[in-house]
Length: 90
Image (tube, rainbow, N blue to C red; front, side, top):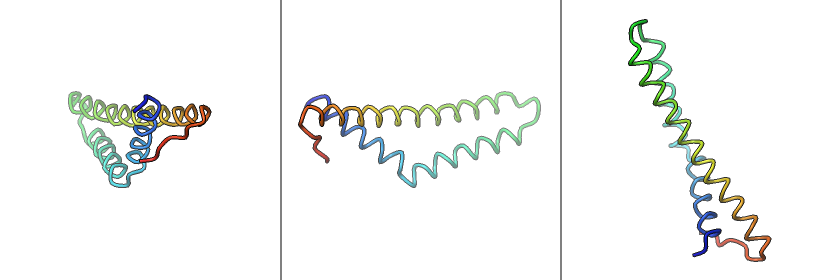
């Protein structure tokens, strides 16, 4: 399998994950839980807030990485079509 086809397929998988209702719901729940935890902390609970912040950052990074893989797949699809060989959808 060539690199463009591989990138296209990975991009399609990333798109499905980004649009998956359960994954979207769970990531939103993690974020909501973190914000709730941050709001519930007392002034001296710095470590709890830092952990919640790190988890929020991790969720953001995960979404960004998935979007990047999806975007790479879109670009691979364009390249393949320009070369006259449309990607094989699996």
